[in-house]
Image (cartoon, rainbow, N blue to C red):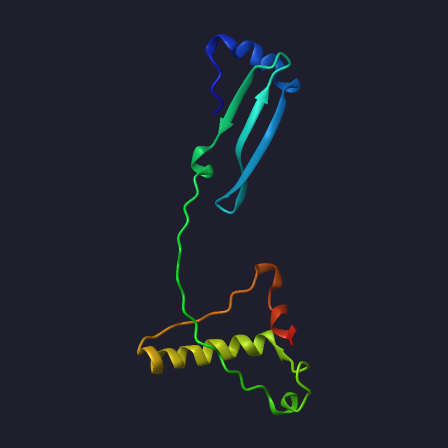
Length: 133
């Protein structure tokens, strides 16, 4: 909501179309683009500010992870390729991670983990065939 003093409402309404609206900031709320902040300036220089303060408050969390190196046994036909040209598909790497990290976590840490590979939604299943070198 934009706070406009009652006595200024008629002028605000009359000048609405010609007001300069800057700078505009946006945020993502509930998976939709939403207006976070904008300043309205009248022809005479009077300013009014809209601010969705809740969307401008950011919380950060630091999460420390320790990952052990992952050794990958690539299929025999690609192991004979010269160094630097070995390839593996992203799908093969994902399967390896999901299977072996789960097993090694139980062996090493005595804890169960469920690693997953989550690509961007736009990638669908195409990512599985992408080759990595």
